[in-house]
Image: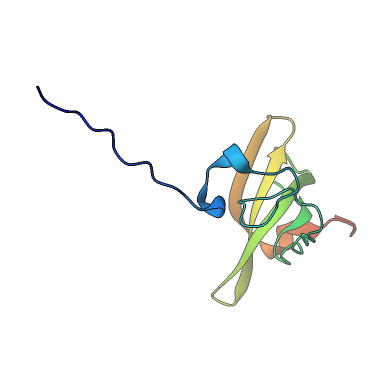
Length: 109
C-alpha cells in the first residue's frame, strides 16, 4: 500500500498574505490605496495644446473651433498641427495649416 503524504503547510508572514488579512485603514504597500491624505497635483496644460479658431477654404470659411497640437517651422514659415471640427459637414479634421489660418481663442478671428 502506497502512503500519500500531504505537502507541508507553508506559513507566510503577516505582510505577504493575500487580501484575506487586509484592514480597512491600511494604505501602505497597496497599489493605488484610498487616495486619502495624498496630494495629486494636476499637471499644467502643455503650452502647445490650446483652443484655437481655424479659418477654412471658401466653401467653409469658418471660423471653426479647434485644438492646436503642435508647431513646426518649414523654410522659415510656421505651420500648426490642428484638429478642428467642420460643423456643416460634421467632420473632424486634423492637418498642418499655415500659422496665418489659426487664431487663439480670445482673439478676434
